[in-house]
Image 1 (cartoon, rainbow, N blue to C red):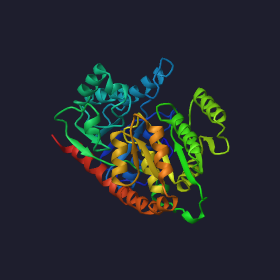
Image 2: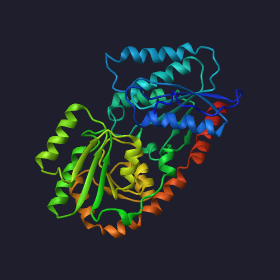
Image 3: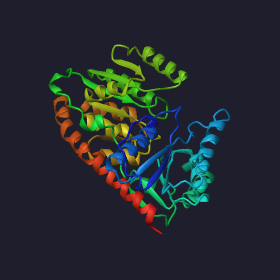
Image 4: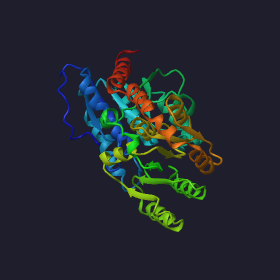
Length: 366
């Protein structure tokens, strides 16, 4: 997903160049995929050339600090080479150092935030102030969600563009499942970087509550987690005697994940931290109906397409109540219509056009 080995179509050497900075090669996830897909979409579109630079800021510590410093030095080493726009992906506060360096080098800078209101850089007053002040140095902000205006401390006066996230081509083009071939039990899935903040343990509580209500279901949990999280998760499933109904699959290949999403009726995503959870769009495009916690970005997705929003006060009970109230046949009847709507809205040609417009504006405005 890093994009470093991806063969891209040739682009006119005279085309403007964007340096995409973001993600960490040792912690592959949504931002890394976003950078990769953006570069591929721009290459197909053909009006901008791309180069990539890993930010190395994920889980920054004394141990990983040297790698981060090397990446900053790699930016400086580009010196007087032609770069028309430096596009920084802002996930962690140290990412903003690239904004400072790029501006000191005289570069045009565009920043895309990948964070939400519950991130430490936003709810800590001092860090929030530092974030806003540094973002003021950007020539343009490229926002992936219209809800970010109300979630993030964005500076007044910096021009905005609204771009889109890039879904995997396999999501946009893959076949949808014939629901008549699915089991006569509601199929649930939770997929994330497994953790407390992502709502992983609440999903198991939902399953326990569904069993108590007599609801027939199968549930699958996929994704990576640290050793302690995985131990707790397996222990919790065993303690509640849910082994026959809940499968903890861990990290699986993307093709397998997409097949699980296509065969699922409901995505249970009770994250407290995601600003704009890509898995919700991916699941909807595959035919699963998302149930999400009350966060602005997740609510926006559900209101735009399909799904249910539950409160932060009692999410487990509300999710269990909603699932228990569903007529399985009616629920499955909504799947394909919502999937096609997401696929149309997030087609790569449309997303690339929005990104090109933002880059063109960053290059030329002011």
